[in-house]
Length: 294
Image (tube, rainbow, N blue to C red; front, side):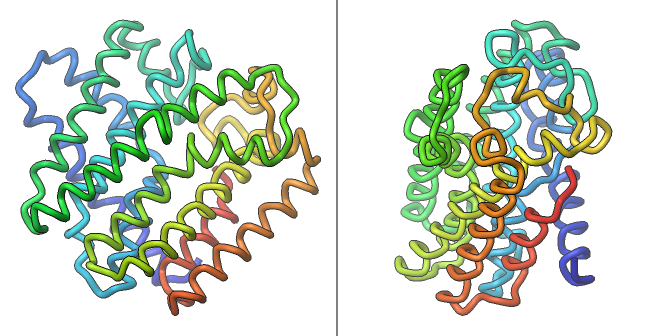
């Protein structure tokens, strides 16, 4: 990573780690619910979605704080999905980011409600944005609901569950991941473009870049599930195989998955080339995702 990107990544993550919990602490609700919400929010993470959004703003010379509410709403949605994904009825995981999963600490019922609360509060947060027009705010909320809901992440989650134990083709697997993981990553990029007031054509091209980032992220996750360590990735190695899920290495072999990763990395850079945004933090972000070890 370049020194500039390392600094940007560090400062952006610090901003999110500082501001995100404050949006929850101000909620007037039961202390146990708030505690459960904060437990998962403060567990850390790569904060890829906020960093992507703010990298777009930086590329268009906008202050990154203009994306703070949307970035934090994204992390709330992402965190709620992880809480629910770890439940016994879903992936039944005991560890998340190196810590006991939410339901292991607070019980299943509270974990479900903590996820529900993060989901709904993310939309409240978007409704409170003051530095964009009402029309832009409505557009962001519309895009967000599609990316997070039945058309996007939630539908992709169900498709992923229904595919367990089945031998999928690589295109079928990519279609699931485009919804389950890719839609929120694409929204992060597109939201940055909307806040920056870019042209509809630029927004379309940036969304295409975001979809490539989504595939890069998932392919790399599948590779790390085989090559990583519990200490690095914060969950049991081989959990996808244990859960009988199709993976890119499972379909293509490890070398084939790595070749696919390289191909989608090239496509992501081509999207940036068409936008005249090579050698920006967005290119650094794509490189970071491909080379990460957790």
